[in-house]
Amino acid sequence: MLTRIDLQHFKCFETLKLPLRPLTLLSGANASGKSSVMQALVLLHQTMREHEWSSRLMLNGGGVRLGTVPDVVDQVHGHRQFAITLLDDDSGWFGWEFQGEPDEMSMIVHRARGETGDGEGWDVDRSVPLHNLLPAQSAENPICHSLTSRLRNLTYLSAERLGPREYYMFDDPQLTPVVGPQGEYAVSVLHSGRDTHVRNNLQVRDVSSPNRLQQVEARMKNFFPGCVLEINQVPRASAVTLGIRISDDTEFHRPAHTGFGLTQVLPIVVAALSADSEDLLLIENPEVHLHPAGQAAMGEFLAEVASSGVQVIAETHSDHVLNGIRRSVKKHVLSNEDVALHFFRLRGEGPVSEKPQVGSPAIDTDGNIDSWPEGFFDQFDKDMNYFAGWD
Image 1 (tube, rainbow, N blue to C red):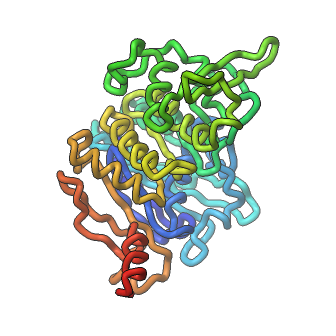
Image 2: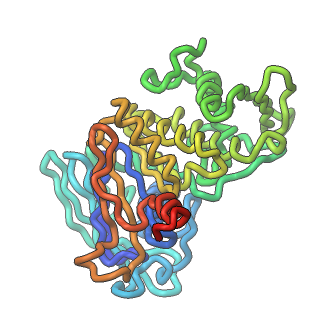
């Protein structure tokens, strides 16, 4: 499990040292750096997956498209370079320094450093051949291989997810092992793996089958009661159709006629139930197009996924998602020590000593939070105070 990510001169951060847990929740103002944390991991992911022997970090790929070097380097303190360091449980640490020219869309690995728990270490410059961004001679170390496998196979779901479609692309599972950053392969993954057993600790027990399709349906019913899914491959075409029924009294409908929220939640559920233990799942705005009760249910679902061994990092603006996580802690679905809450502020909001760029409220075993910084899910209280005449 990743236990910390450090960023230096990346986007809006001069220096960031962010603890990670099985479930990490990122919240705060728009444009305060929440997505940047995920993007740093996705840059490593897409470089390893799409260019595994590259000595350059690819800023544009299948996961994210971040533009050129000035778009990713801190404009206040950076100078054409930034660094990423990952701490991996007790297994060691892995760090990279990247450099590039202003008009470039990738960055050279200027330096790669690291050390594993078994005593192997490296500190190499750009002249050393790299495999999955690590020195080739170290890449096959079991500890290094574990890290790179998790980064290569991580699932990232952006806030801009695919809406209802008449049909969805269907491809070989080897080419589309995850649901894609827009959830564009979610129906394909569900169809190709429909008979795959969901891991025991994520199965809904009162469902007749442990197969992925039936288990996904059962989970979707927590958000959309009565939901039933029907997937059919289009003859002589690399495409599948999705039919959705939300009542036993109706026929299957096209996704466009069943509510936008359903197609936004489906990729999250498919990704979670398709993940293996220790996989990484990154989700932006899991609450999109969900009713408040559904948002709370999403918080509980993410807590259950994290308790099963999948590491979840989620960015949210929803106090209902937060409260769903708090309820799960109180019900002992997930230990409070396995939850990290981080509140991001806009750069320049007061002296750093008074208001650090990221604050980290703690949660106790009853789901109580020890501090509520200004702007941390407090808008409801502010509005009620206004209506009461107290503000």
